[in-house]
Length: 131
Image (cartoon, rainbow, N blue to C red):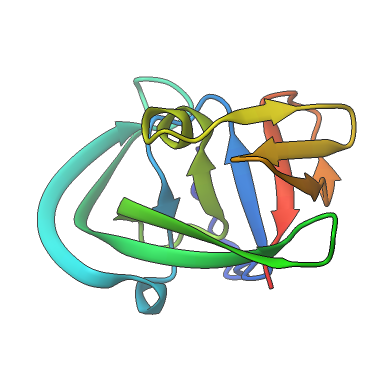
């Protein structure tokens, strides 16, 4: 997880991170049922700890391969001020009963297939487009 600070949020993309331990957002307005909880998470190693005092619930909509809008509901999303991209933890999705499978240009999640919007140089990081 990285906290970029160039001031430009990517509100139309979500990063699915195979190495992230928590879901996160920098968009405070996207959270509902917000509660104060001090949380710390390693970001790119133990020497770079990110601290958050807010967690909440968040919904996002993704268009599947058949053109249908699918709602992805996440609970316990960490708010990190300045975070420029929303992050879905692949491990958290699976812990919550979701089944996630990657193929060359697609991501299957709970039986729905999504086109990868963008790959990165890191195989554990991919981007999906949010509607």
